[in-house]
Image 1 (cartoon, rainbow, N blue to C red):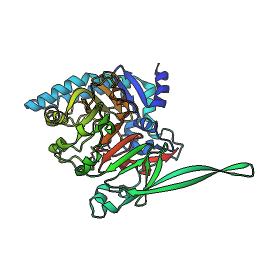
Image 2 (cartoon, rainbow, N blue to C red):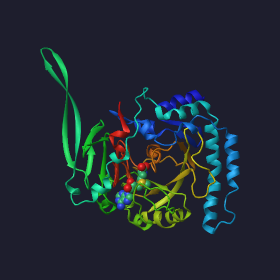
Image 3 (spheres, protein in one colour):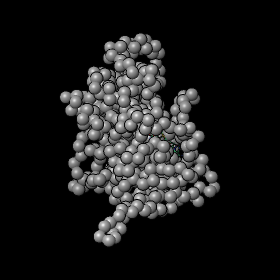
Length: 418
Ligand code: SAM
């Protein structure tokens, strides 16, 4: 049984732990649709792989003993908001524990886990991330007066056959297209990934994908003139303000009220959209989403998915009961009606499962595990679904990515050639 599952996992990146819980390898999931390049596991998994903690395999019982020790540290008197947060946590905790226990009881999967960082790399071929200083700061570039003049060059590879004396030779040529990089929809409509150049940096643009790099003030430009060109799946990972002043953040945050003006309804397809919103575990934020944000966007809540974060040795990245720093995040799912949601043309949707748990090893800071592709079964409208990610830092084949740095993880340093 485990072997069968491992075989499926190596192709799909998805391993079913229980009826409603899955272990996933984001690298395999992302790589399913790249053609000429692949995401390098050693640069994706830049954290949680230090040798001191990745070799030992914890026993489920040890893990729960440790948890019990920590539980004692929980504050004795919780205020009203903390009590609501604690109730939510107590509800989801058994599901997370069950998923985690099943993972710890799958020795072959744990072996695979410990090697994910070197997956598919020949000895010495694994890439390490170079100094951070070599990263391009899109926010700085986009904020100067010259920004409208900056251009990105898209290099399309073409294989042409030339015929001579009864034989033929394959000639590779590159066709270059140059276009403004900011406040402009930049698209690779081709069926292969391409390389793009900007300020001596190379970026990988997946097939049939596009990005719009701008500040929130320009998001209106993405609203389609006709809702038939709107989106069936809208994934949103806002730069929420974080209560903790010590939290290292690599991007600017925005006050909650700014997100009320996101044009979710106008981005929605004629047949409606599934909206997936990443939220933090702060109760104040959950209340804001339920009482203000979803109603303002016209989104009706449908289900919650959870992302449980583990290290390479299978242990959770933190104590489950630690009040302000849980090792899991929540994706809230809801539907937004389009002009013709009730039309007979809309295919009957699979009911969306509630409380689904996805376990994975996190990549870079705040990088979300790619659940978008796993939501496609619950998306209204015709196929292929039209998908967009708001506040994106990466691109997905077939999707539109919007944010002030959607090329961040497309830097060629995160990729290897296939
Ligand atoms: N989902 C992303 C990932 O998995 O890597 C992380 C998104 S992060 C939580 C929020 C993003 O919003 C950051 O890239 C940040 O730079 C961007 N952002 C912050 N303020 C913005 C603004 N005013 N306009 C557009 N994007 C903004």
